[in-house]
Length: 220
Image 1 (cartoon, rainbow, N blue to C red):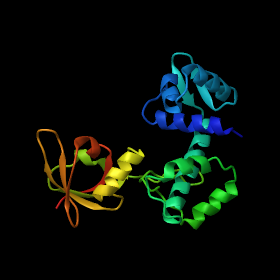
Image 2: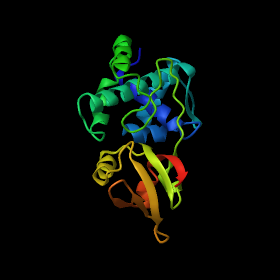
Image 3: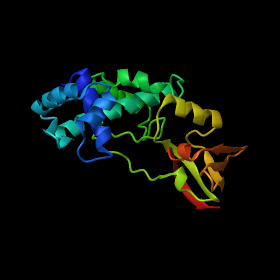
Image 4: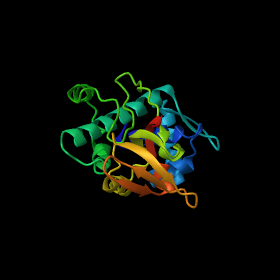
């Protein structure tokens, strides 16, 4: 059984490990908004519990036990986000902080019933995959919108930037999950992208396009 803080560390290490093999304590400190010395103390506690492997100056890796615990937290977080959006009518930019609280509920029975109640969803409101009760993720195939060419079509399936400001910006533009799009034009000067939606055209910056995930249909 892990504490609230230990679970937060495991989840952060898990997400950082998706980008690099050995997670550095400074990166964890930045995410936790705390001092590296405090991170080192917590990492030692997690190592004593068999949840991480830690070698000074070489970084941190999750053990199999630690990885399974982290995936379980991710599963709960994403299921609660689906519940908040689908059943309580929260917007996709409002659910993260609430799910951060709910993910620490320990009841396995509750989570299994929640999963069934929601119809065993495969992705959260941001398009991130939800692992099943055995920790397995459904395979997803997508590319970044920035990789599409003029004339390419596809459907918005996720985002890689979850800040409230970013999600609100997309919603204002009408760029939400499940929306079909077509690339009308790409500006040579700054890489901004003109997108054709069903009822209008919108323009987004290259930076925004980097964080929108698309299931591509190729060219029409």
